[in-house]
Figure (cartoon, rainbow, N blue to C red):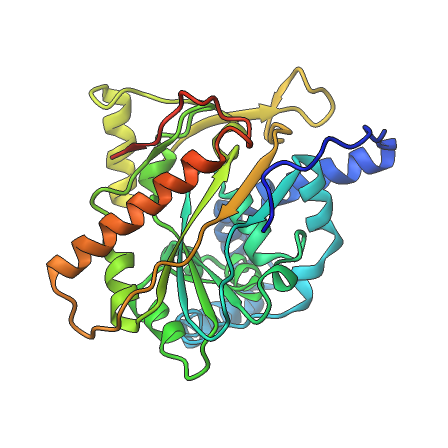
Length: 340
């Protein structure tokens, strides 16, 4: 199996062109996720130009195509191999560590932790070939679940669908795991928007104690549970975290309940100067460690006792995974996972 840190090679000097390509690769990912409000604005502004028929036709398309994200989507292979993903990988850098085999004869529900600000390690390792996912896990078909509301965002929805993202809704995930062909791997960022509020460099806090829907999903389909942890994910941006009793935190939680999006305050470095503030992530290593599978029996109507049992097994496996790899991934030995 892989190890978390390779022997330290002789330091390679990057050319100026390579540095720029890496920074543009990292910035491209950030700007794509931040483009959601501008997508709505563009569709609206087109209504007041000579191109208004395009806006009307696209809105009709959104309505007619509304069920596609939950029923197979429109995934293409070629976006996974874009060169820009390898430049993004090299910027941090991002690594993928395999600790156990995941035979393609089974279906899997992978729990990805932590959410961080933008799930950079999870996206890079599971939805692109920047770290050769298909070679390391031959036969597996990964699908990353995302907030359902994003699949109503004009233009943006087409981009995320072609990469293999799908709504994190019951119908959507049931559709994937009900396919006659096995080897489906659903990746769920379990902590979601709530966990983004805990994002602080050096902090490892997860929203997991009351998140059991993924276990129920796995039981209904007999899909093995797999814990995944991305070390360094919380360090890619500097964040302002508020205590749970503060009015600022209350405003964040209220906004999340209304919009399902957490309004986090974060900043990185500038594009032209590493000492300035900007949207470019900090170049800190991200290591995504994929744990071993936890076999789960198939039960169409799992009891609460079964759900609690396998939820506890999952939490124990995740904690072991963290403890076994934290030091080799640069986390102090005294650091522990905190569950909320």
